[in-house]
Length: 270
Image 1 (cartoon, one colour):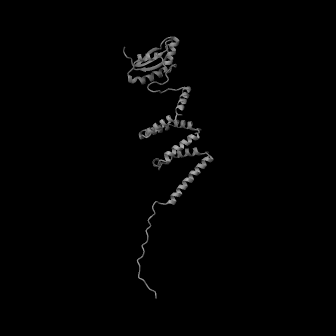
Image 2: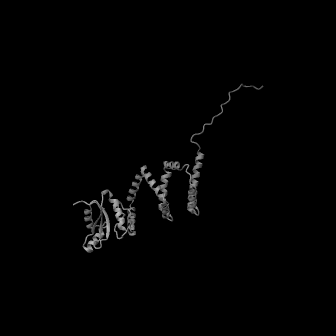
Image 3: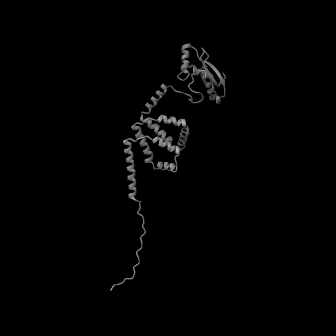
């Protein structure tokens, strides 16, 4: 039998309405797989159709094409039949899951499963170690930084992120973890402090940036605990500066001394 490569459709045998569009290197073999049912789309519909009518879906060959054109042509045919409604395809076609939208119930199940998985300390340690190894590669860090930079160049994306973070209050445990991480990164890492100092030296904020920073701080009032922390930090800084001034240089300065004058003649008073 000649192998057919291209785009196909599965239609309801009772009405002829197309319910699913797919691509295959061997359309006949792919159709036999669909007829076996299964959990993946459109397996549940095929199983239901057989249970109710004892009939298989109607196979329609929409287009024969080269293997390299399958993804593009599948996207076109899915968009074409989606306009009529009733299509079971959950994605826009092609490779990957572009266009897939999970139901709220599916999202809740996935979130619960991920949350349960991350409660295991071994899993968290494994993920942390993998992320740390990944970002030790300068090329990977540069790639991530470039992707974040391009993402936040979009005003809509910035507004979306700001709305998601606005009003979110971190727990005391989360704040303690963030503080410990920042201390490890900056206080205990002189090389990182030097790198940031060099990167920010001479950098001037634009008037728009300064205006945004000022607007963000207007109306904010520190709590008594925050004031106490700020005062303690300032006192520690001043104490360290006084100790440095009191210690002076590591070696005493060499002060040139005036040579003793040569002894002159001795005069006896009589």
